Amino acid sequence: MSVRVKLLCFVGIPVVTIFIALILLDTMAFRRSASVQAVERVSLLAQQTAQVLDSELSTAAGAADTLAAVISKAHVDWTTLPGLGRELVERLDLVVGGVIAFDVDTTVPGVPKAAYVFQRDGRFQERDITDTHDIAANAPWYRTELKPGRGEWTEPFFGEVIGIDIVS
Image (cartoon, rainbow, N blue to C red; front, side):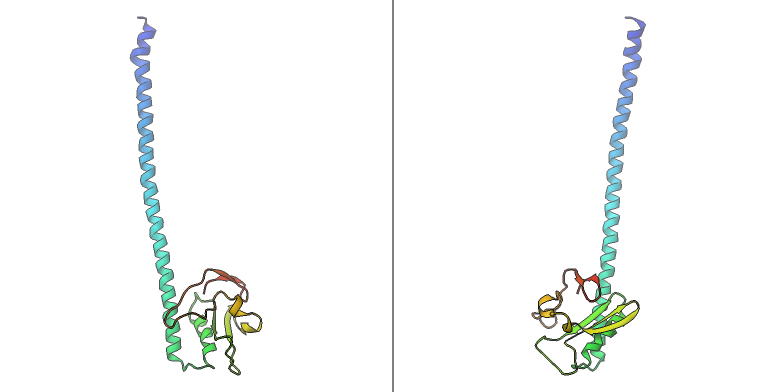
């Protein structure tokens, strides 16, 4: 056997084999490390999402509590109901507009059917949206079938009056 063949058999092939083994081991370690990091990141993302949802739910619960407090402290009748929307918007940063709508077939002299209160450019604006909108047919938030003590959320929709996407 020549020196070249001996060198190839006893040095070259073992060195190449060792390098291939090291590359394979490094690749497997990299995969394991990447998997662990991916699991950690997904876990952190899930925790952050849960915190955001918890915060939004507590804000929504606060809005419901505020509305209940506003309604319970006020003398509520046909003439005071439309003003409750403004107080709700004033007291809750999350709420950009409020409307209390009556059955569209009900008419009380001097009381708007759907008094909408909202803030635009830092100023409160009020309008009876039944003057320009058929809320019974075209308002996603108007529900005649709600049962007392129960509520529901709409899917997001574009609020034409205020000009932004909203839920109700």
